Length: 265
Figure 1: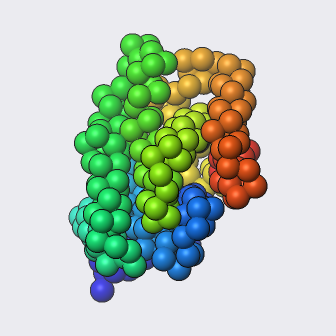
Figure 2 (figure 1 turned 180 degrees about the vertical axis):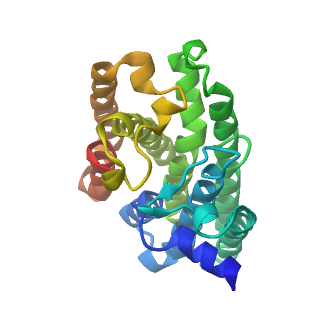
């Protein structure tokens, strides 16, 4: 079926899998069985994949390259890409509804993912991003941080929270994990902005220089490259400080934080 082929094109063969890795790293750090994290890990990656399919559409960022291959609307067609994104989003919630967890845990994870994906999260951030495109002189650093805390950070935070929910951690632990995830989300975006001006399309797997070409509001554009790098270092310290009380058991989360800052694509 053409729709299924488009869905597979969007999800399989490529990607860093940062969000599912965060689910596994958080959940296992606090005692959850790895196989019982499969559903939330898959669900958050499906939401991420759907968002990329829609972001790449001509009416959004209008991009032709994603994960080193043609974007879904280029490989198939625009209508199929829209349907594939819609179907991936629905599949994410179907998986979570059937997760190996108590009813309360399933409801909590469904809430986290739905809020992160909606108007108070990723979709709201994308709307702010579209509104800011071409208006970077009018966007301050605080507004840009808010934009990316929604567009990028909300789903990363939901990944961490779903792992924590499945491990049944306490509120104090959730608060520290939120601090880690918030720093991670901002660091991830600043690194993305730097890669857009420093990387090449072959390495990135997507079109390099697109932010500048579209006059998007970015951290290097507002702060400069050196200040953006300095901010990355400060966020690295913030991630480490948030996880410090947990000791060695959060080593995998620390490694993912370093990966977000050091990555080349």
